[in-house]
Amino acid sequence: MKKTIVVIAAVAFLCVLLMGCAPIVRNVGSDLSTIQQQLDQISGDISSLKAEVDELKNSQEGGQKAEADSVQGGQAASATPDEPTAAEEGAAATQASGGDYGVADLSDRVAAMVSKMESATTQTLFEVKAEAKALEREIEAQEDAAEHDFRQGVLNRADYNAIDSELEYLEDQLDNAEDAMEFRLGYDD
Image (tube, rainbow, N blue to C red; front, side, top):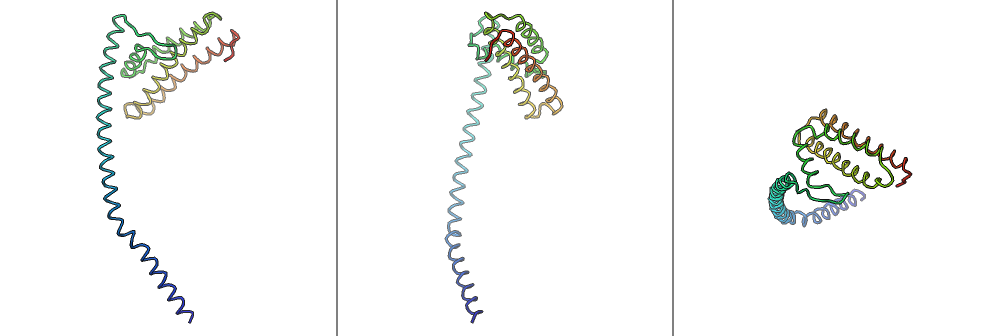
């Protein structure tokens, strides 16, 4: 008697399981075609986005060449202290493509900025801070360029680490000099 009940329960469970799965099996075919259509649409969207990115890159490269020509002609664009000028961005791109990421030039400019910070007065504090911020953005741009080249395989890990540590050192020098200047002049930000 117990065996009969167990067998009937097992058969009933099996029937419920099979009936519950039957609609799923029928819907799999339509789901796959829907998914395929969605994948085709996404693929088309990706292709159009790639074309737009290529178009933007080409227009940006043309714009950088025009900006470099105007800067060489003495018509440098003005910028607010928090925004890099076209000359700074162009210089950063040129330095990055040169392979050394402008570390030597940046090192000289950081040394000059540190001495400028040491001789700053309360009247020149904000001007010097703005210049330091612009230089810090250039250093960060070079760090970003080096990281990008590392991720693209242009730089090996050892070269990337060496460049990154040199740029971090320059950034630390700039930050320490700025802190010392603020302390000396009694400015608390």
